[in-house]
Amino acid sequence: MSNEVEKPRKRIPYLFLAIILVTLALSAVALYQALAEYDAGNSGSGNSFLLIGGSGFALSAYMLFQTRRKTMRLEIKEQPVVTTIACKKCGFKNIRDFQRGDYIFKEAEPCPKCSEKMSVASIYREVEEKH
Amino acid sequence: MLNPLVNQASDPIGWILQIAWLLFFVVFMFYGQRIQLYVMLREIEGSLSRLKLLRDEGRKNAIQTIKELGKSEGDPTARVDQFLEYFALTPQSMDPAGIVWKLEHLLDVMDERFKDEVKIMAPAADITQARNLENTLEVALDLNYIYKVVRHFYILGKKTVSLYVIMQLQMILPLIMRIAEAYAGALKAVTYGQPIGDGAGALVAATIMRGYEKRGIPKDCVVATVPFEGRTAYVVKAEGPGGNVGKPGDAIKQIIEENEGKIANIIMIDAGEKFEGEKPGEVAEGVGAIIGGPGVDQFKIEETTLKYKIPVNAIKIKEDIGDAISPMRKEIFDAVAIVIDRIKRVVRERSKEGDAIIIAGIGNSIGIGQ
Image (cartoon, rainbow over all chains, first blue to last red; front, top):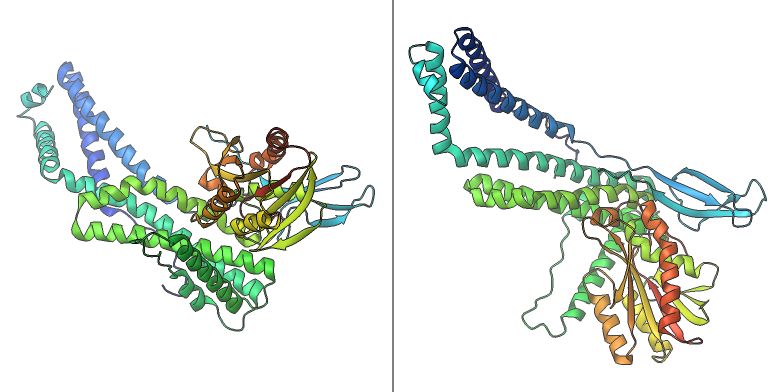
């Protein structure tokens, strides 16, 4: 293992891009041909070319989306954690971001309302469920 | 459907499309498997770069924390890199009799070795910081191991051009990534000393024993004698707030022996794996020694309770692997009050007034005092 932390390489998938470009070009040609066939009154051929062109476009768009998705995921999400400091006597609560050294039941500063010693009542993170 | 295209044979565009169509078939007929292999490899490469990022982040995090807290004289990088390659061999099981004690010895040696390493790397760290640092290094070690295993099979599959090696890896990869992401989530939590989901059981015990006198009990646990629903409860947890799971098996055994086996009931509380579809923080009851890890503590509790015929009740707080090693979720924190109510009910139903009982909160006490 090297001493320096390597940054993840940003790979350009040239072959993949070439395939996408060729598919796109062929799809454009097929769509052009479909229009020409409809103009000439050959709706049967027009439909076939339209199907080929449409499928080609859909395929290349999907492949392009796949390559974009891979590069977007290279990050680590920070999870916000909150600390609640509470006074047992008067019930005063102070919710703030977690600070290094906080732990549950740690004695904290005196209560601003009744001057009783407060303590850390909870430390947790809230998660929004993805549906 | 192809007939109209065939009719266009005289048209050059029709020709081009027909040839492209035929080429498409030929390529897929002869190179279909290779294309499939290439697509799978690309997918694995993507996951592998993410695993590398997580591994590097774990390593960087460990080095930074050691520099910050440990105030060691030299650069700890080389020592951290050496630590990340650490391994432990499981005991030989050809003759399985006595394997638990061999495993326990091995785990003790590993634990001591990790503690010594942390002491050397961070001599200025206090006990809580040293325990958190030990956890940080363990997470970095696990991330490094996951990355290396996946990379091994990726390179092996590429070298042998074996669809089956690549396919197996690709199929299991989502599960591996889930575990790796969970470890990545644990990185900051263990570095900063935040309570994690696994500490749910310890938090229950800490809440019950709060305000009562505690004493240390082997190994790395604390016990408090608490009047509870008219009974005498010995409440046990791993000593916090540093990252520590202790050896609750030893602690429970000692309490039972101190009381000459006169314990009416044992109630164990731990975080447990939930099924998909279940909500984190759901509470379930059962019987048996609920405790994770390699099984040594479970074995000891089962041996001792069998000897004295003590019933063991279990309360599980449900969560998935990601929640277990990430900062504690609100739902899991809120489950503590529900669990305490359940314990009260179990105690009332399963013991008589004046009995002695044990309430053991199992799990990592990181970020949880007592």
